[in-house]
Length: 29
Image (tube, rainbow, N blue to C red; front, side, top):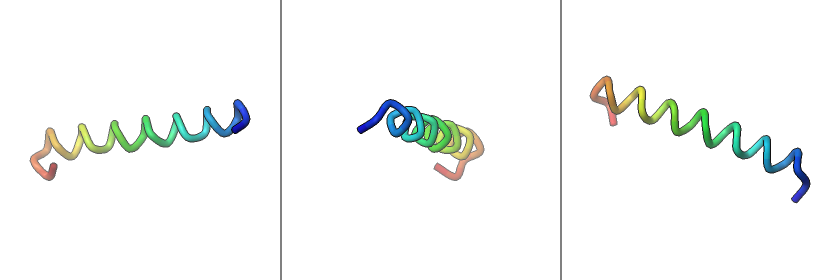
């Protein structure tokens, strides 16, 4: 894995985690 791959994956994980928190707070989680 290159450093770019790690940053790409980390950014997607961050977006997914953020989306899950938002959905959960709205009652869809």
